[in-house]
Amino acid sequence: MAPPAAFVTPAAVAARRGAASSAFAGATRVGRPAPTAAVAPAAARGRSARLPTMKVTIEESELPNSMRGVTIHVTADEVAECYNKVVKDLQKRAAIPGFRAGKVPRKVVLSHFGKATVTASAVEEVIQHTVQQALSSLSVSAIGQAQLAQDVEEIVAKFQPDGPLSFAIKVDVWPEANLTGDYKGLTISAEETAFDETIVDEALEQARRREAFTVLSPADAVAEEGRVAVGSLVGFYRNEDGSRGEQLPDIASGESVEIKLRHGQYMAGFVEGILGMKAGDVRDVPVEFPAESARPELRGVKAIFEVSVSALKDEVLPELNDDFAKSATEHATLDELRADIRQRLGEETDGANEAAINKALEAALVDITEVTLPETLIDDQAKNKFATMMSDFKTKSNMTDEQLKSMITQDSFAAYKKSAHANIVKSLTSNLAITKIAQVEGLEAEPAEVEENMALIKAELKGKPLEDEASVRDKVVGQVLRQKVLKLLKETANVTMTPKPTEEEAAAAAEAAEAAKAPVAAAGEA
Image 1: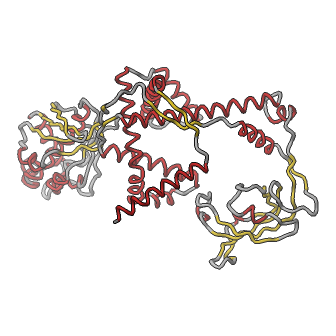
Image 2: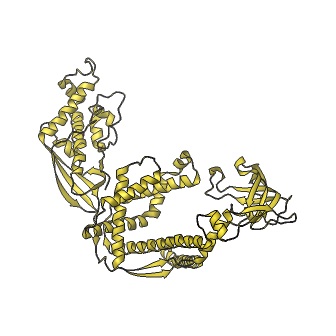
Image 3: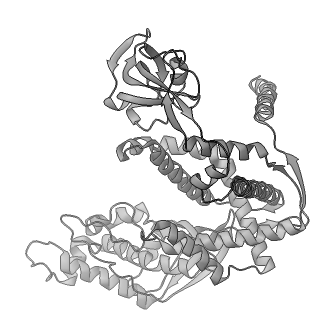
């Protein structure tokens, strides 16, 4: 479901209102009370607490670029009601010397503020009270902000306090996809994730490590991968010349710390710098904190750790047998444990392959879909994705609200929108194509399916209230329909699964693609 469109009061109207409507200076959305002013002989102050239902008729017309033109016709009675309301509000609130508040005669008010000012306020009253009603009556869903489609001065000039009024607006609407090809029998190719039995062995090895215990290494033992070093850490900032600087915060130091000597366990270079040490050794280990460090003040910091090793320990892993399966898991035998791990990993592999097929199907839909996307829709999607990205980044990096705010700027959003534009267009196009297919095929999200998904979402919240349930429900409906459409497409598609490239092959392909771009870029510069 599309969010309701809004309407921004034109600046020209705000300027014409003058002092009588100073509380409305600037842009005001329909249906939202305007901010009050310290001195407000304004018809605006406190008005519109409840928008009355007015008798209006509308005429719709299609405009280019997925826009809709709307001519709004307001009856003479409704115009007179708005005009009289403006005047009465001025009478109640006007601060005019010689008259008590609320007792200013109508003629005095009109003379004091002038015809132009009162007319501008009345025009705004009519616009504010009719545009949202007109938008909600459209045959299609409007998005973004509605705009006047004519010069506001024309509306003000033809306004009569006791006559009908017509004016035109334009607004972006949800576009409709046009399918230029047959969506049944699509021919696609998707990367296949093959099941790797070695992953089962790795999962069992991880289970052994979780159940491991340590014993002191021999007195002459050397720190090597797989062992545990016990000692103290003192961190220092690293100067440009590689020497020690000031001491790091206490969080980067500690006594009797157990350091598992496995590559990739800590920041790059830390484990490697300890290898070869013996009990009693002291060594300076140069490191660099990762950019995503949990401590914002340590992100990307180059440092030196003074590591004092007091002891070395060997990890003792339990044997992989039925006793291990019984003690560490709920399974009675090792074979049962292995089978369970294989099944779960197999389901993950199947899920990855299904996701790859869906991705390929959606890409194929984009190729046979024509649609004009309003910039409003692209901008809204970019804002939502940008907000989600920043929220995730804040959570993962333990960032404060102030630090997050400093990163959210017009420039950072503009850069994100530019980089994400192509993907947003593809995503919107495929979603609109799926919506179109669901309509053509008569597919619907059954209430039971929606409620089942809603129940799962609420269960994950563990008693916390679900914010904006209506919006979440709309998304669930969309997800259910998407699953049904993709299932339909898969049933008729010609699918070829190709082996997923190895990391080395992917890196080589990326390098080749960059190399291919170079001559094109050089030619463009020439």
